[in-house]
Amino acid sequence: MPLTSNTAGQMYALTVFTPVMAHRLDNLQTFLDGLPPESSPLQQLEMVHFARWVIVPDFVSATSQPQPEHLPSPYLLFSATFDGSLDAFLDDLCDKLASEAETIWGCCTGAPAPARGAALKAYLKHNQIQTGLFFAAYPDATVSTVKRALETREKTIAFATRAQGLELPALREAFLREFAP
Image 1 (cartoon, rainbow, N blue to C red):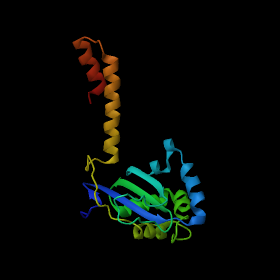
Image 2 (cartoon, helix red, strand yellow):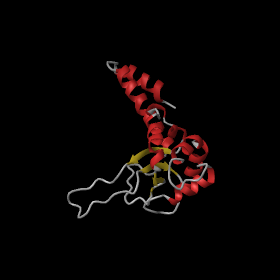
Image 3 (cartoon, helix red, strand yellow):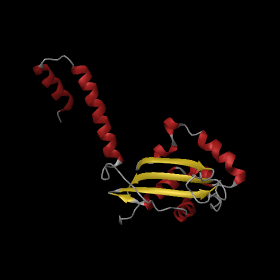
Image 4 (cartoon, rainbow, N blue to C red):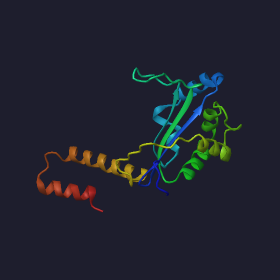
């Protein structure tokens, strides 16, 4: 993978900023609001560490700005951090989330109709913004590595809770039963 401001180790940070058609804004907001946080469709993408969609209605002007800036329309911000290459991620997104992606980016100006497959992938790449600063605490840790570490953590906490008060020989035996390969 070539080194860019979008990469940290084996991780890639994607930022896509697409204008939303005014007459489709309510539909998009309703759809995004209706996505259940506990079972986001983004969970289907196994390489994703973090991803989200956010509607940006306008820039917020700071009093220190010489002049306020405004967006010509609301924009959809899509941000994702994932393992591997941009092309592999976009292929996965366009395949596994075809219906959701069509509903979401179908509300955006310039999106292909239908907003699917290779045409959607090209649209997302066209609207990609280079990441100015990308920090990953563990840039070489894949999603599967992180999940295994979290499982080990939970297993260790559960063991520590159960093993409280055990005498040393019993503690050693219980530990080996639980964690020995």
